[in-house]
Image (cartoon, rainbow, N blue to C red):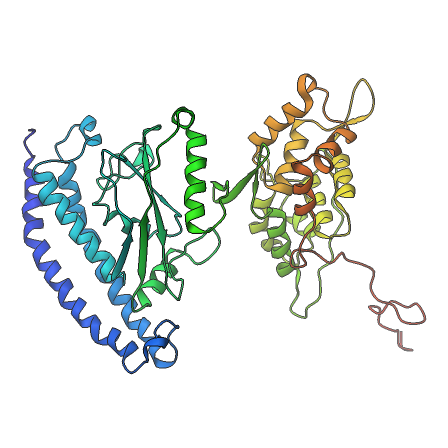
Length: 482
């Protein structure tokens, strides 16, 4: 075995002294938590314990949360030396094999106990286990779902801390590592949080990490339930087709959970789903733009800011000041957070055609057919030979990105399929509407995404109201002195 460097030995000796002292102090403070936790439930009938606390009891969370979080982070840092002991001195090729000897008995056992203590301090006092875990020979891989919170690693404890499939960048992190081998039997594992108050869910749009930790640590007790399903034996077709294998396992797990199976994934920080050959955002970004504009356009007195017509052309680029005027914003600084909804060039300017199409969509005065015509009119170019208008790949991808949230790579691939061998000629209006209005997969998508909810629509600026004699109400009547 490779001898340990002197600095590493000193680090372990220091840890051997500090660890018991720190753990002892953590347990002392842990017992100080119980009086406050007991105060939350004392005198309450059993049937009311499932309801959120009210009155003075709910303020105890302000006492429990900081103590619990602080102690949990102390234990988290104590885990690191023991996790490091598991891998120190091992060549990289052996990291894929199970640990043995003292690495498994001392280091692995210490990581397990400290991990359980950390979750216990955060309020996870109960881990319910249903079903029976298969042996490593029966199912070398466990697949857990749904992944709804960063507390999900707690399920590693009843599984005796198996290795986790992760990105290759995390291979050298002591707690993470491993690889997935397609075609072998797997055992599905379901995760549930059956609590009366959902404080754990961390979604793409919702409370942030710190808020989720604070809310969970404020609860008296948080329960997690995991269920081992029977081992899934792949068929011959599934063994050579990982996508088919994963989809079928997903359906089995969704059926057991009583929820629908979806094809959602993340592109950047946005969740997308698959429709035909396109990935589209679950909620179009143009809807989000509408909500933000409704909020930003409101003046203190509740009036709406009038917008100026956009200089629409293929070369029309808008800087922040021009974009603010087109969007009807009173203050140019309000446009900074909205520029990300449009594509920008190297100078940070926005295509005026995208802005114009977005505003016409948000005004809600056009049906999908009219909007498809308008999109084609804005982004098409005159064909050099025939003289008619054609929509080319760049414009096609821009329309799909703006209205559906589709990545450019998906739009380019679909464009090539629609055009066939004549991609250089572009799409005619009829061909574009065959795709957007009459295609069996995509027509419903366009009709749904282009019918905006009321919370996203904008009021189109109109002429000011007039008096009965036709004088604009905004104009002040002149006095005789004038």
